[in-house]
Length: 172
Image (cartoon, rainbow, N blue to C red; front, side, top):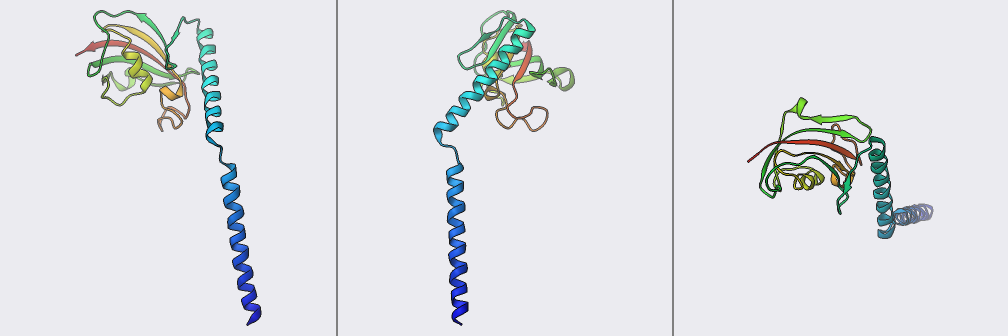
C-alpha cells in the first residue's frame, strides 16, 4: 500500500514537472513584439527590393505611393479621379512577380467593382482611385496590399507580390 502511494506521488510529480517544462519552453520560444516588428520590417524591405529588381528588369518608370503601392499610369483618362461608391468596370490581368498568370478578364470576364464597397485588394482599391475613366495602368502590390500572409487559397500563394495591368472600360 505504501509503495502504491509513493508511486502515485511520483507520477503526479513527474506529470506536473513535465507540464511546467513544456509550458516554459513554449512561452520562451514565442517571439516578442519587438522581434515580430523587426521581422515584419525585414520582410517588407525584402519585398521592396524584389519589386525594384522587377521594375529594373522590365525597364519601367514606376512611382511608389506612401503605402508601398507601385504604379505606372500608361494612359491618362478623362474626367475626375474615382472616389468611394464609383462603379468601375475594368479589363485586367493579374500575375505574380515571376510572370505566372493568375486571373484575367479574358478568362473570367470583366471585373466590376464599387470602390469602397466591393471586396478587393487594398492596393487595387488605392490604385483605382488614382485613375480617371478610360485610363490604363500597371500596379505592383506587395503582399500586405494584396492577399497577405495567406494568399487567396487558389492561384495566389502566401506572401505573393501581385502585378495588375488594368484598363478602365466603363464607369457609372
